[in-house]
Image (cartoon, rainbow, N blue to C red):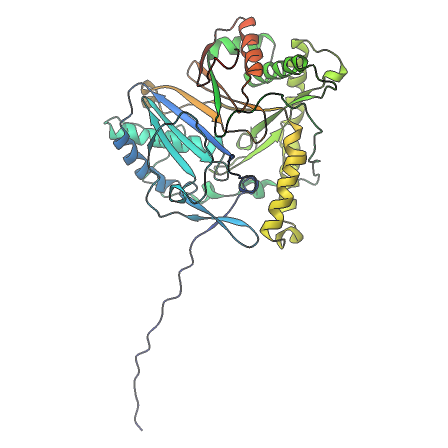
Length: 442
């Protein structure tokens, strides 16, 4: 009997490409994408020496592999969008532009959903919100800056949010912390009621107005403590006061509550190292139909609201509401284009109408001790609003408190009422803007 030995070639199994689900809050942002709107925010660090773009590019190239949450491209499936690792060249650093937070087209920029700009002493990072929130993006900006300074010959330690680029990414940095913690037996109602909408004339296409205020942290803290509230509560009250004054100046036929959309960093309540989104929204508000409020009454109202709503039980109920919706078997089998229509209409008709303005506070920003001497201050900008409104973003470094208003409205009424109130309170404010002040009074 003749035996024939055949060589059998084993074809290797096809390698499945890694992909990531969008986190719980990230699903809505691509749905709202349009030609003149992307949910993009910007973080900036201002150094004390002019930026070298070649060294900055090297720092970005060395840093980004440590942050897989940001080195991704967005893709569409039949039922959901998802993220895949992006191996294209880039992102490439660019000279800054006059109108930041431009719409981020998903197939441009080699499909990267982040942009890095430089101008004089400033490094700016822009992020599409489906990737991360301010806390996660801040770690990326800090690490890029630390690597940049090391390339310039300075020793910077891996502390205070600067990650070690020689260390592999940790799984917990990519987790969807919403799903991990959503466990409440109670679900919060989604609608908070209709709020006052700011009146004004819309700016031309792609124009984002910025008014930037710089204050002393100690001055503002001292003033807030005189009212027995936190700095965030104090600034919330000042903005609500400004919005009430704006509604009065508009001479509206029927008044509505003024309300703020305030993101809460859930990492401060539920332990998590995720670099992805992990925030929830609360809506401090004042209803002028109940009567005229003094500034002191507004402060007390905000203080009590924060104490009542910002806690683990209330916020767990909030994220459980969202988690249960997206995990529903019925929702899962609905095609993506139908989901997009429903989510967009819900956002336009309900979500967007329940706040008058947005306010976000990144809080106290710290860096490694060796890095502090090279940093002047940090900045945060909320991007172009979805509707006609103004948004306010706050951050502090050292004794510098940075307050940025972004708006697509020509008029500056809200910003004027806000900063004038701070001055009336005895605070010193330095104002900078990219606006054409010949067209608007401030």
